[in-house]
Amino acid sequence: MAQKEKLNSLDELLRIYWLESAKELNHGLTAKELKLILEQKQSVSMPKDRYYDLIEKLHDKVANISLGKVITQAIEEKKLTDSQVLEATTIPLDVIKDLKADVIFTNTIPVLLLKKLLEFLSITFDKAEQAILNTYEIVTRKNMAPENNISIVTYSRRENSTGDKLLKIGGRLERKQLYENKESLEMYMGKLKELMAA
Image (cartoon, rainbow, N blue to C red; front, top):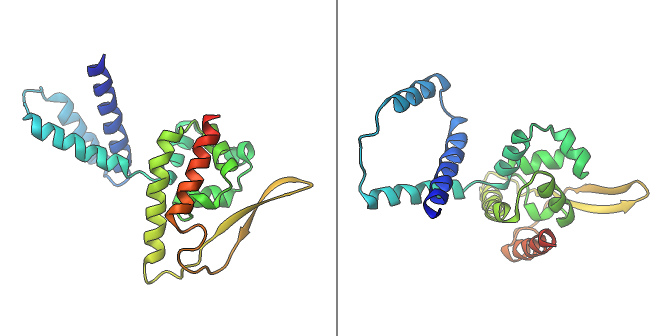
C-alpha cells in the first residue's frame, strides 16, 4: 500500500511539473518527445541515489508553486470563469485577477473571503499553505526591485446595506508595513487554518 501511495504521489508531482512547464514548450515538439518516450521499452536502470536526487529536485520544483498558480489550476480544472468565482465568493474580479497574477499579498484579502474562495475551489489548507508563502516571497521580491514604485494595493471589507464589499485602498506604503511582514502573514495563516478546520 505504501509503495502504491509513493507511486501516486510521484505521478502527481510529475503531472504538476509537466503542466507548469508545458506553458513554455513548443507543443509540436513536446508531442514528438512524448511519443518517442512512450514507444521505447524501459530497459534503463538508475542508481537509487540518483533516483532520490531527481525526486527531491522535482519536489522542490513543485513546492515553488504560488497561490496564483494553485487558484488558476483549480479554476481551469473545474472549468469555471472568473465571473462564476465572483458570484460564488463575492470577491471582485480585479481582486481575483490580482490573486491569480501573484501581484498582491494574500493577507490583504479578508481571511473569511479567502476561506470561502479556497473552499469553493476545493483547495485544502495544506495545499494552500506553501503556495501562500511562495506568493509572499514573489510579491516581496517584486516590491524590492529598484524599478518598482512600491505602490501596494490592499483590500478592506466594509459592510453596508448591500452586503460585503471589498474596497480597494490605493496608496504608497513604506516597506514592512502591515501586510508586508512575515509575522502578519503567519498570524493570518493561523487564523485561516483555524477557520478551515472548523
